[in-house]
Length: 325
Image (cartoon, rainbow, N blue to C red; front, side, top):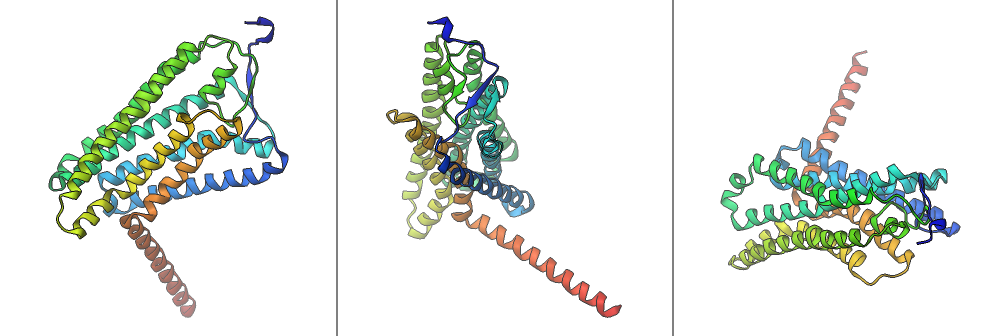
């Protein structure tokens, strides 16, 4: 190691998604649109579930947790790049960079575990429907959700503690649009072999493979139960109850495979895959649950009808007041 080429840094410079000036504005508008859709769609789901008693079920309780995760992770990764586009200030302090990395990694790990808990919820709903509400009671749901958040936190702590020991870097320019493990390790002049091994074991085994395996086992039982249903109508109805979750799970693991398990390409392609995983997937989650779920669509129609009725009543009251005066 050449110590003359290393330095203690107080801040990093994010290069962003692209260096092409002609693409800056279109990418900014695209990222802003994705963020607004993600924020709006998830907020609608949270408001619908909170205000409609018919959606006060375990499935929608977990969906609310998923919406909170999507909004939080998207905000953590995209807020800085949006600020950079507007202010041209692409500087981020070391503390803020590490905090961004920690929160994003925590939320990402929690989301896969939460999807696993949701697969168990679908397993109970389809394989043991008569005892569904008894098994998935409020205490169980709260315990599962809390465990997902805690496990996601505990998973990332060893890597973060080791990363905090890194004290010098070859450069302070991060060729990415947010702080992630690999870009930071590529800049570090410390020995990162142990951390890379930890990330590989924790990331591939505990954070991805085990949740995938548990989800896969749940769906083996689910599909087996569905295939034993004699009527085609019953099979269609049973499959429909888990189609939204299955679509979201497939989308998440496909994005993970594309980003982390395919051969390394250019930085440009790596950034695009990161954008897919950190922005596009969280945007699609609420849309899938809204478009493929009759309960959500019905609840939205009821709220729109209710708002319309209130508007009509207020208009009638206003007209009567005018007539009286």
